[in-house]
Every structure is written in structure tokens, then in C-alpha cells.
Image: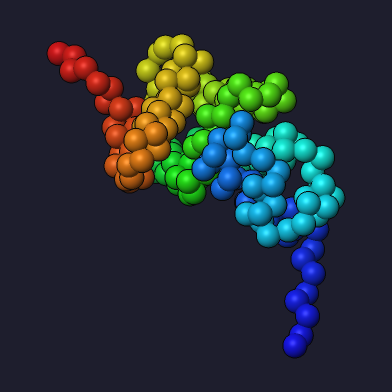
Length: 196
């Protein structure tokens, strides 16, 4: 019988991160242990420690990878091209990334377990807010976004995407990505109150 080929370090690291995300989503950070993670990954304890010095280090790496992935799906807006399809595309990709697995939401809401992880989450949300605020400022400058505080509006827009996903996860319900995208886009373009 042929012997299985050894995994490359990158593939092994990804395997450990995926296993950790599943365990953390199921048990939460405080209750998850290194033993749980190595059992989920099907590796020896020594293999785990070849890649990560602790559960905290692995959690930090998982957050860094996840936040980089979400940031990576956002495409720069070309102000010379039709704007609504570009905005729709970015919202669709962000929602898709956040709904891509059951592990994303618990990780993005795992605040208060350790300072290093909290710093990653603060950085992620600060960067996301700054990116959206800058897009709103540019939109105001070219006359396609109503006047208002771009920073505050950016926080609200991020919450409009994050909160329905989080609440659906808490309730164990499914959420239609298409419906969420259309509600966010409708809210952005029309607002909530009728003015007349």
C-alpha cells in the first residue's frame, strides 16, 4: 500500500486553522482546548506546536486570515464607471464572505477573550470603517452620496451587514444573502423614511 504524501507546511497550517475555526465556532474560545483542535484536525500534539505556540496564537492567526479574506473581496470603486453595479458587487462579495461558513460569525464576534485577539478585531473594524468612510467621502465629492458624517454612516452600513448575519447565527436561522444585499442596497439608495 502506498504511503500518503506528507502535507506541505502551508497546507498543514491551513488544516489546523480550519479545524480551530470549527472547534471555536462550536465550543467558543474559552471552552475550546488544544486537545479539541488536534482531535478535529487529526494531528498529533507535536504537530500543533510546530505551527502554533498556543491556542491564543492559533486564534490570532485565524482572525488575521479571516479579516484579510474579507478585506480582500472588496474591489476598488472606479469613479469613471457605473457606480451602482460596483457597489452591489462589493456588498454581495462581503456578504458572501461572511456567510461562507458557520465559523466566520463567531470569530468576528469573539471579543473579550484576550487582548491580542481584541486588537485584531479592533483593527479589522477600524480599517473596514475607514474604507467605507473614504468611499462615502469620495461619493459626496462627486455628488452621488448625500451630505452627512461619513464615519458615522460607515459604522451604520457595516452594522447593516453584520447585525442581520449575527442575529441569524444566534437564532440558528438561515439568512438569504440575496435578500440581505438588496435590503442594504435599498436602504443605501432610498433610506427608511418617506420625505415629502
